[in-house]
Image (cartoon, rainbow, N blue to C red; front, side):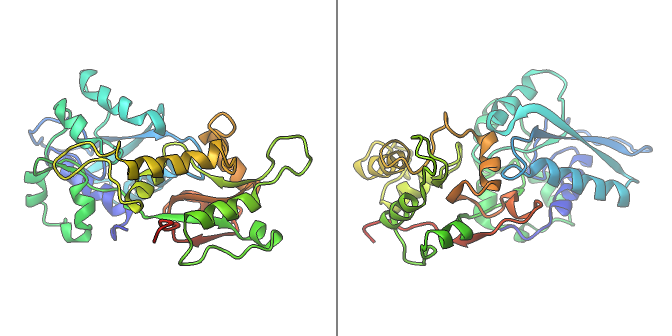
Length: 317
């Protein structure tokens, strides 16, 4: 995980903006000319509308960091948070429209991993290279190289990473205890995941509808790529060729799909939307789910009794 705090990240972004660029895991279309500043410069930070506070903590993080910065460093700039009507799932489309809308509606904004090439192809972003080199307060060694590379395009940096988080398995310790199941161990695999999820999936009242799911695959979450890699596949080859149609890649995707459509241990999008996922977790309605380590679930009240485990390995280890 990136070692710099979110508050420092916004501070760095603001400093870059005052030099005529933007950063902080956020991008904008500001002119390249610095301006004389007698009054604090007003900088707009655009964030998506929260879908669920448990799995989408970005608005809260930003509000807190902006409040701290405005109370301690009001002399040169003042940050204002603007919450978009757009949900996180459609955020990329909203950001793509900022440049075409004429006057930019924000100075800093978050982007999803992988959006930089598409945004820059529309010339919507400024390269941060020159500003990063002149900013003596910023040390790029504070970031993992892979995180920086993910926000670069054709040798140019267009964003600073906001958070780099590994995927983990969360498991409901109470539900595991009730089912007399051992928690996931370091050597568990795909078959073990299916077995545990099957044991945890329950229809308590016998009405034919699942009341407790064994596993939750959140829509838009990235485990599919992980399973593809584990099975020896890839989405793209080193030369840019498509490898998603290879048998090993297809097998991994089919395994994930089978958890919902064949084994029926994970709900479909019709049964549980992203907005409903947080509520389901609060109600102890899920035994296992995979998501980022940085998810907001441990920063909310009341506390949740979830344990952490590594994702399951490839079944043919």
